[in-house]
Length: 141
Length: 417
Image (cartoon, rainbow over all chains, first blue to last red; front, side, top):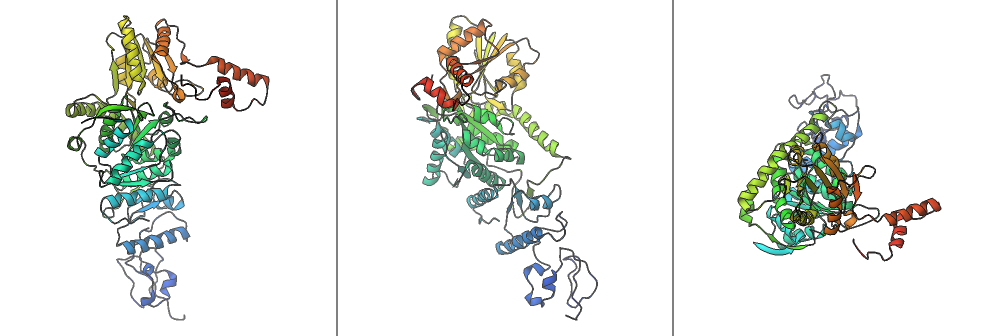
């Protein structure tokens, strides 16, 4: 662990290069997570890739180190990858819905709907039914 | 084509002709036959492409409709009574999001005491929810209003409730004219959503709005309902031109020429009222009927214009605001504010009590003599009420009210009048 850690640049437009030791900031977009940075490039997860979907983009109002934001991004990014980006999200009322969206801003890089606290599964069912009848693959998260 | 069919079946056929893409419903009397009818049409392939989703509750039914509508599908559901209350949170949400869902409400009383028969308590409880509320007078109008409802809803991107009297209409077999698919297709264009969940063009729907714009969002819903006051008569006129009959519109005036007394009502009771007024007209009484076909938006100006020449107005309503009186009456009062009109409210037909011509003749005779109090309950059994009040004075543990009253009445379900 004595070698200097590779440090990331601030965004996808400025991808880090192997061996880059310049000081950097931990922006969410385009950054490698700390755990992944310790791994060899071939062992790094999708989440450490600068080409990841980043479905829940940076700039939202979650507290620093928010586990829900991280978890949501991991889950939705994985689903985006699995569906080739053909994904619609339904989100229950809660902190995630609030910190990610106050109009006119939104961190969601995919079609997203919030209806109520207790109906997210049913809303998802409706979306899936609509996609099915319209002849599209029903994929919803 | 003319057919002799049940009102619920007529509505199912009308909805199917509108080519809904997602139908979701939870059965509840007296709505059940409508969604059963649609389920059969989907199952047989007669209605295709369409997804019929069985849900675990009315709350889920409206939520599925919300998701489906937001994903760009023409969406329909139906409910009644407790079901409407159970979905209430989602009912407000659908209108707040501006999703053009069409829902049939087979009007039924709200418990307790539990009661499956007709009155207007259920849809009136959702009066302020942001949905347009259209009331059908007959099975033919119920059928026709669904065609108009989808058109209106999708033009405005606002949800529309079609209210029809439970059992009286839903379960009555009457002759209805069913339009052809080609006629309906020419009247109702395919659904073009204003907002849609589309991976190629992602949007966020339903985000939080703070004090800086919330009031404007709510005002726009009001503005759209006011716009509907223009569009509802236009759509009714277009409907008349295409289908050759009067259905919908804001008001249903009947024998209003030179009417000094006007009776206002909503729904199927207008039929009984018209017969009653015919009898009074034959006896030389200048009396007319004004049906309210669009309860939301409420046609304040049209109502005021229609009532301006009159001397007295009687609002006959199947709804009741406990502690106040009439629900419709309060809105009518706003419409006629400042006019020299004597007004009375007659609450009638709660929980399915029959509204007979004899009782109407009796109450209208009192109105014509200016002896009708501000608030009357048609055919209220005052003795029954007094005995219960006496029991409550006499003993602390007087027991369940409904049971006491039914013991006094004698045989349960022995009569509806």
